[in-house]
View 1 (cartoon, each protein chain N blue to C red):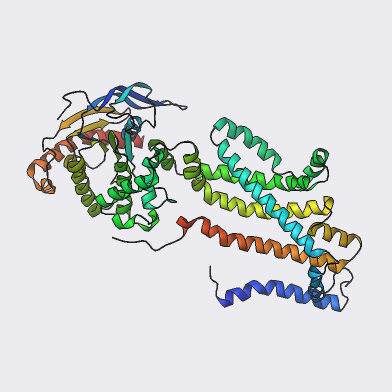
View 2: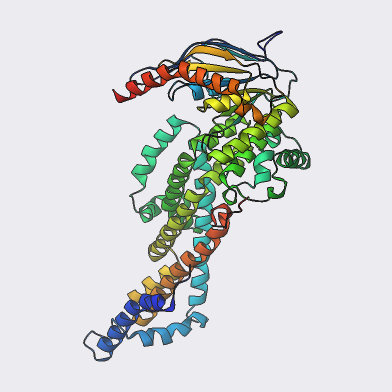
Amino acid sequence: MRRTLREKWALLVGPVLIFLGWELLSRTEVIRSTFFPPPTEIVSRGVIVFDAESGLGDDIIATVLRILATIALAVLIGVAVGIAITASQWLERGTNTLLVFLYPIPGVLFFPFLTFLLGRTEMAIILTALVTPLIVMVLYTVAGVRSIDRTLLEVADNYGSRGARRFFGILIPGALPSIVTGIRVSLGFTLIAVIAIEMVGASNGLGQFLWSSWQILRVTDMYVALLIIAVLGLLSSVGFDSVADRMLPWRRNVQGAQV
Amino acid sequence: MSATSTPKVRLTDVAKQFPGREKVTALEGISLDIAESEFVSIVGPSGCGKSTLLRLVAGLYEPTSGTVEIESSKPDRPKTAMVFQEHALFPWMSVRENVMFGPRNRNVPKKEAAEIADEQLARLGLARFGDFFPHQLSGGMKQRVGIARALAQDAEVLLMDEPLGALDAQTRTLLQEQILELRQQTKPTVLYITHAIDEAVFLSDRVVLMSARPGRISDIIELDFGPDRTPELRGTPEFAALSQDIWNHLRDEVQAAMAADDR
């Protein structure tokens, strides 16, 4: 989607105004610069990303890897489970109750429980982060299968499509538009969950860095981590949108041939 | 043209009810034989269960009572292949993949299935469009792909559910002639549903008239134009007279169905 320059400017006005105001208020000590250091100072402190001593570079890598592992598992398991349970109405209804019950529980709350089973391990972190995105993926996949045109399923039946062919040839592509939306939503939840769990239960990662910076009052470092998390979120959604288009080639609006 | 030896399709006292708060009887007492290479059309008011009948023959529904038998000429030959009303192509498959769909489900090797598909696409004048996606085609072309997909199955019986219903008048006329041509070339056994009387008369050996609620066969009209008819048939007085005759039969049914809808 191309926006004109004018429209692009409009997108920047809000953030620029906020940062300008913040900068001014902080420099003049109207708000305490100890807690709200001016944005220019935060940005110039950003070099600690490349500073081996701070370890922030490694924290970023750790967080990104956790996000990738979580979203990959959420998509693989969520889509498989989602499609499997649509095979039976009984299963779908039964599972639905469970999912709707679990869905509003903040995923982080499963962390203590999972540490009983797995200790404070990487596995416990990822499985905890997985809870909400996985539920989202299952729900969106089920909705996707339900949204497949009934006539197309009749075609599949009449033309003898069964088993794996039906799964990969009909159900997955048919549900894909909804699955793609599910992935977009899950990415957001994954980021939130991973950061939150890192804050309480990891020995590295951006969340942990942010939390410990706060505890020892390295306020500027804390803001640097916050900024990086925001950028990560932005990159993941922009990055995913560019991939998503390619996942649905038949949705692209190609000029029709007329004969 | 009625059945001489064993019929290709035999419906015996078929009834279909749909369960629900109020049980709906869609079809009742349907008995019909269709001979090999015969072209039978079904016309009737909307809601008379035409589509249900076709789905029973397709095996998509089970009859509540009665039997549907289709004679098998070869054990691995599909019994039916259906052409759907709104083309019902898979939007994520190319045109060729759509036509290969049936053969691939029967584990025909990919290369061979692609050859079958290209042959059928060429037959329908779509040779150049194998790599297109359905959304890039016009309505008439999509419906031809739907027909090619059914032909690629080489099934015992070709089922067509108002295949031209969503098309404009000119495209419809053209496709009617194409279907007639197919009929003459490959001599398939066809059960054809339409609400257009002239279409039924133009294409069929027999026209089955149905009444609504519950759907029953109210009359069967034999046409003796033979399979070698030409598009000029449409201009003949016999054609007009027969179409008028069928409409006279049907008028009361349609009015009754409309009155029932109003209630």
